Image (cartoon, rainbow, N blue to C red; front, side):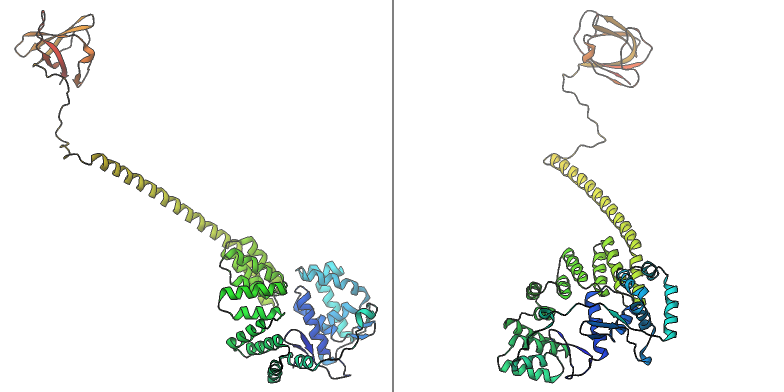
Length: 477
């Protein structure tokens, strides 16, 4: 049986009347104090503190440290802390060393900062101290006794209180019997149901445990543990979260409550917030920081993940665990760069896809507009068959030949054309700006004799003095 027993709602120590308190009790109590009140320090330092305090001697206000362990129990960790706690040159500096180590400072730097000597030199002094085997004690300061603080009037214990105290040790079937008796007597119902629930959990009967926790809650338990453990076992998310909120109101310092709320969150941001609170309330638990770091990485919160890994390193209890946390922290920068590149590629692909979508939409819209315009029209004309366009009067005749001369008379002109039978014909051009000229080459008419070039003239039979007709169109083949 351990020296300190974890009971239903507190730790307990079993002692025979007038018996000396065993060293194991002081050692286990020291470990509990460290676990709940100090930052993580190297395992050898924590073991040494527990061993040194296991032989503490208290006589009224007089406290003595350093009584040696039995020879077969002495070890290097104990000798190191014995030297620091009993040597007048080091005792006052010991708290500086412990503070530095709790803050995660490198051991060599922490020793140098506290003692003015590096770790290697201090370890040589530990060797000398252990070899000399001259283990002296040292008196330490203690508070004066206070009648109000240190003395209480004895109060008689009721039978039900004694039954509950014994049952709360959670020993074996004796506790089950005691709790059931209290329930039959309708005494301390909430506590009795909670005790039965904890025993059922220990025996791996979760459904039975959940039922007992529900009974404890129904009985109005003031214990946050009943709500917390009930939520741990409850599959219904709403019922579990309601129970956890109640546990928070009863005790807002429990790390497990925040961790369980975080685990049931669908919003990743809220989940991280609750995991952060859980880790802060249990700073020595490396698994809390690791869970937080992984949650941050899932959301690509690399800076926050690095901080969590750093705290996990500090909380690690073994060198192997610390090395694993360190490797995870160092890998974050590459993870960040990989994610950044993947995100760049993703955005580029999305941009290209959006451009393609817009192009496809524009083409589809154009096709739709064309279809709407063409809706109801007849068959499209043959593209190879060109029909001349003309809305004016139809010319009366056409002559082909060689343009010989252009006579200009103010704004009007006269064209002199030699036909194929070598006859000259004259055609009037009253308004040159309204007569279309088509064909290749020069499409303007200059006054005077012309370089010989072929011409086709359509004309209206409007005879005037010296004119065979009025020009309608001119084409240079």
